[in-house]
Length: 245
Ligand SMILES: NC(=O)c1ccc[n+]([C@@H]2O[C@H](COP(=O)([O-])OP(=O)(O)OC[C@H]3O[C@@H](n4cnc5c(N)ncnc54)[C@H](O)[C@@H]3O)[C@@H](O)[C@H]2O)c1
Ligand SMILES: [Zn+2]
Image 1: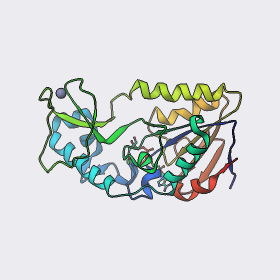
Image 2 (image 1 turned 90 degrees about the vertical axis):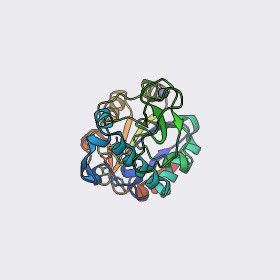
Image 3 (image 1 turned 30 degrees about the vertical axis):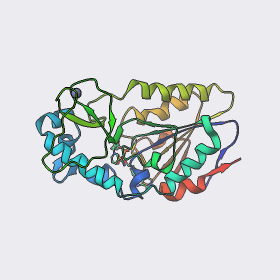
Image 4 (image 1 turned 60 degrees about the vertical axis):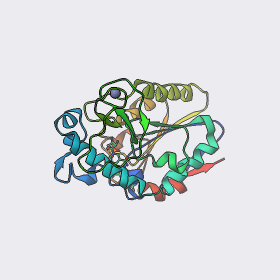
């Protein structure tokens, strides 16, 4: 296996997806087969689904909270923590995962592009999203203390926009890395390359002259766009991949 050398001239942007949490026991999106307890994913992960049946949506996210609280980060998460400690501000982790496992493992420079399972916000007023680990009892739809509106999970659902500040942070990092005079590397792990804009990052990095790596169990939709492709489990590949010099 080729080694990824991380030296004092390297800037590294990492993108992770559901596959990185699979070895912790969190099902991937594809593992759900497009259905959850026989409900189409859109019913539990879109604004229309929430309007139609908020009770069902809260049941889904309460169960996912319970599931994510019960699992632990795996060696793939730990490897990324070690890389960040080595690179400092020359490291940024953009994750599509909402399970919070990267932060629990110790990652600090993290952009949670699709939100966080353990945060809630109001669907009506502009009150800031807040930490919320509550597993609501079956049939509950929590309401806002400020306006009485329905609370909702702080998750980017199908058909919703990502936070522009998050995208800006990733773009700023990529610009600094690719104009640093050093080496700019992008590594994607455990992501199917189907969900945009995350799936398009590899194109931007290549255009900017960066080096690209993919670590995935199955071929991703955008595999051909990467310079280096390693097929395997992130929990096994990542701990051995980097040479910290
Ligand atoms: N853990 C989570 O927070 C979680 C879980 C499911 C879905 N989601 C959401 O669903 C969407 C799904 O997109 P996605 O691309 O992240 O996931 P995905 O489920 O579409 O794809 C996962 C990819 O990971 C690969 N994979 C599976 N096990 C792996 C392993 N052990 N090591 C390396 N690769 C492995 C698969 O081959 C697949 O290509 C995202 O928007 C994400 O926010 C999040
Ligand atoms: Zn409110």
